[in-house]
Length: 558
Image 1 (cartoon, helix red, strand yellow):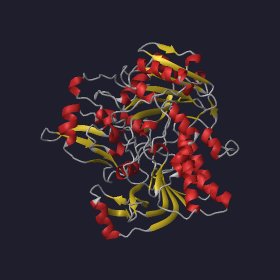
Image 2 (cartoon, one colour):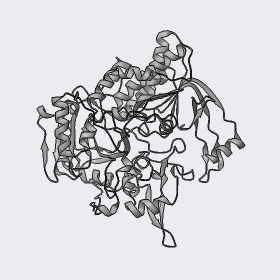
Image 3 (cartoon, helix red, strand yellow):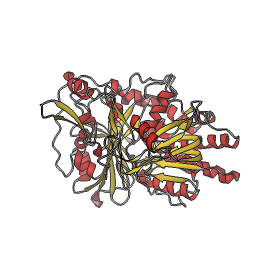
Image 4 (cartoon, one colour):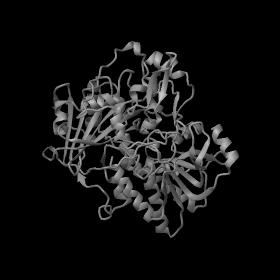
């Protein structure tokens, strides 16, 4: 921050642009909010200026999701989305839920599959492509969309309300000094600013701390989702098939499971989710995913196929009990920045679209009344009256039950969902943040994972390569440390350096200095922006901040 201040003193002031609403993040939540604002303005014959900032090089570049999409919110945003060409092409035709042992797969009878895990009427999609389509609709309505411009700093008015954001400086070297390519960031001022950064948004995290938005709420809990896109043998391809698994390779006490979705064009999305409350520091979610693909019931789909893309992203999974206050003076949290994902359904895009719409409607009303920089109280009020609240309330006990072990959790979830229909007279609580759950390495034996074969299983670096991840090498490292000694003195000494294993991109590496001392090397150019390190670091010493605009993954159709 000191470097930023010094740069501003030397090169400032920053240019400023004024909008009615500035939206940070060009995902389903941010774009839906922008679209809804413009729709309302057109309906009422009013002018509303809206800007969307997206840190990725293009819309969809950083979007990673399973993804099976419930069109319920899209139906509200664009009732004619089919006619408009939205890329929802593959309707779900079959649901399979499998419990895996190391060699066997036990299928759940169709009548016993809880409603939350059925997907009739939903679509297997590339969320990145849906986001690109939403971007086209937004721009057609007059929304100004700026890809490659990360919001790096929150701006405040004198009364403490949010004034807007500033974009990051470009062309700054590793030491924070301007280069020949230097370009000062811009300020974007707004009457209301929406934060739609996705899971563990770094500005959202700051807002929660400043305004104490988590007061009275359970600690938030997360998962990491790791995904590959494959092109498989047409003889094995079944468009519309949805498979979810639980069990092997994870032990009974570790929350997680897999998804396998057959899209169009002989493509299959396969992924693995691990709850970040796990205890064993030797566990590697990436390696568990690679091992999962070797199961006889799973590998049969991929043998002879071609892996075409890879990515990873944190998932905000705490549900209703962990949902922060979503408004503060001058702005709102929407989508996964707040944590509206329905963990039981493994779906968040419909809730992102809905919360973007609700926040937009609240802001439009406020703008019409001549208000600005106050709390949009009607947004959380509308949420509590919506179908989304009902859905999340029904699902509220899923994650807490499943965190108590696979078998016990499955039985209790069945009782909760099939007997009580999600209306049990109790709400289970999350008692600990994920980073508090890691135990000392001395309590465990190292896990020996099989070596990758380069055909079905792969190492991290070859995976990062096909995520099209790129960062300017000389820019400041965006994986910052509060205390540079803690990785060696605490994380390595007590937890055997877990950052080497929970990172799915090979960013963290312990190496020896010339003097034979351990040192943490941060390969920031590999970072796929999953945010796992920011979440799971046991000392909360790692803080993810936004890199230079356009850096990170560039997912084609994830």
